[in-house]
Image 1: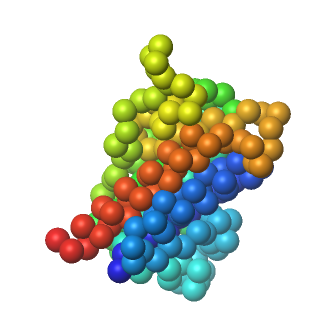
Image 2 (image 1 turned 180 degrees about the horizontal axis):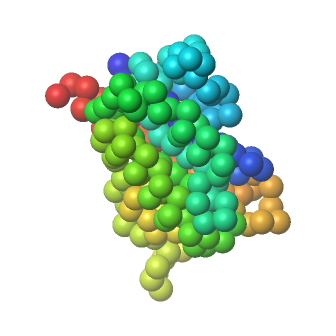
Length: 197
């Protein structure tokens, strides 16, 4: 039974919605155990000893990282989590775990790719195995619509766009939520295959 952790930070609730849909997609894969984990709940290690909140990550088969894109890169809360994980890095504790990423911003671009690249490099430093999004870009032709999956058009991970004047009850829109679910399902399926190999 694969175990998938979704570690996320959300400043205004929009990225939390995206994280919940990543988790929902992973849960749709039969037998998958899913943990939705706010990044701010992870404390810095003391004397190189990690608290119990880190144990679930150590046992996971896959970890999906997500945060809003602030000022062109990952939010400070997720970056702090990344730095706190250096002990796991030193011991190669996450080696060969599946990894993926997602991000959200108000702008269509907002330099979200830079955020996903930062998460990707972090995962590579941990010797993880990256899973991207296997969807062609949506809404980029005369026959496309805003309801298309991957409407923001990313292969690295799931991107969402949330209007700045709308709350998380409506933003990100349904297409981005379904894209997040697709990523979560893909990660869970990859974790199951990787574990059976």
